Length: 298
Image: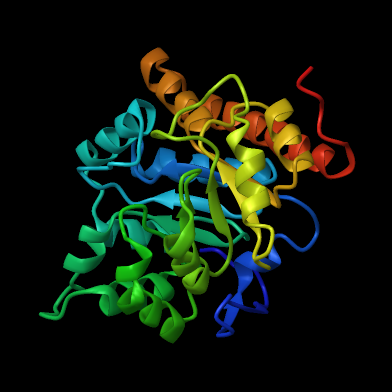
């Protein structure tokens, strides 16, 4: 179970207090936030992989709670979700995983609203956001990312998160602006997930110019900005932090390693070692970006 120490008191853009262990992860420099789907390819292997990411330098870890219709995900993460579901992953088993995994960084649950809305604790007839968030808090989750939940419809979940001390992270796309952006920023806490490019998740070999514009658009809000969608190397991590990001989020590049391990029948230990090495590369790249100017595109 995660044990990240005393929470740091922060404030949301609307002035509401939020005790955020997540925001504190950004205090000592750019945060490295890796993602893996829990249960891919099995419960025990997944636990080893998440712990390897923590050893490799993760400051926060996003844990994917698999859902059968992951609309924001590209083929790589969709494959991870299929493997996890085929392995028997469920919401309750996910919460048991959170209680079981041995890391000392904040854990964020990334999932889709249908699972939250339909969740009912064992032995209870009640269901919905309050029940889900209460169980997540009990297990040790520090925050939620819900890609398919519009900010304008997020008040019940935001209220439940406030009640139980969880952060609620929103994904800001390059096209998010105006009232919709304002609505997100009034409700967000922990960090903003800045989508580096349009489309679904997936590792890319370049860094989108949309990232710079998105960070500039968000500069007036005092909440950490973590960039994701497409980061796959330490050099990209360095470039994004040098452009003004407070952190990086990496999923597909890590899930690719898990998939390669399945396809090539690597041992759990071998796959974990590769994940730890990639995590170290990304974390070190992000740290370099804090002190280096953004490289020229010329």
